[in-house]
Amino acid sequence: MTEADACVLRARHLSKRYSGGPQTVDVLSDVDLQLRRGETLAITGASGSGKSTLLHLLGGLDAADSGSIEVCGADWRALNPAQQGQWRNRHIGFVYQFHHLLPEFSALDNVMMPLRIRRMPVAEALPRAAALLEQVGLVQRLRHRPAELSGGERQRVALARALVTEPALLLADEPTGNLDAESAEQVFALLQRMSRQHASAMVLVTHDQSLAARCDRMLRLQHGKLQPPPA
Ligand SMILES: Nc1ncnc2c1ncn2[C@@H]1O[C@H](COP(=O)(O)OP(=O)(O)OP(=O)(O)O)[C@@H](O)[C@H]1O
Ligand SMILES: [Mg+2]
Image 1 (cartoon, rainbow, N blue to C red):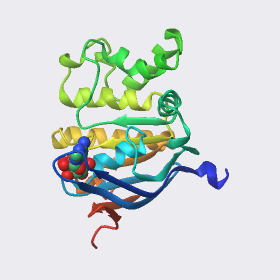
Image 2: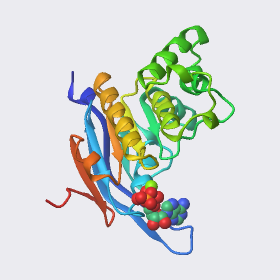
Image 3: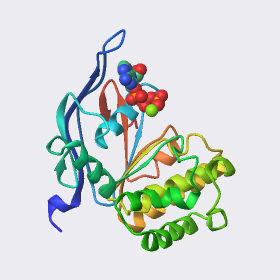
């Protein structure tokens, strides 16, 4: 494997400022970040420190004011919006604090969605989605809609949806923030197991120091900079 292959994410000199609102907010200033294949990184930081902003930039959902971001070798700025969508679908899995499942669709259909967007035939997508749901312990809930699932179950469906494409990069924004301790542990353990299984790199934003400590690396976002946590 070459060095370029091994590097799933490379962000250089990232800066982001929100200037449209009542006051200008400098959220990120000159942030550098690299992630190798299979590496897990926890990002902690106070509320409002810019963690979600950073994940949005990394996932190409918002543009930085300056700096560059490459995911699996492609710079977001070199891709048009349609290509960005395809690149995200192919290489990135997102998990959020709130599950963002489609309410009208069953667990199975929600998990199949990223594969169907790739135009994978149902006959191929369905067994893959079902297998993922089985891995997250929801084989008995395939036909349930999000409203018919518990919070922890919804989050496990969201995990299955993020992982069904076997992405090289997982971006998880407080995926356990809404869960009780036991469900949080379960969801984190699944994230870790699946990231190992497919060598997916992961950026995990969390307020939970004990979960953060179980990642390969931990950084703290403060005053617009990513810093090693205090010893
Ligand atoms: N669209 C926007 N316009 C103006 N300011 C914004 C916008 N989005 C976020 N901000 C500000 O940028 C800062 C960083 O927000 P962000 O959501 O990235 O923080 P966070 O670290 O994810 O916080 P939390 O832990 O509460 O989720 C906040 O002070 C917020 O008020
Ligand atoms: Mg946030």
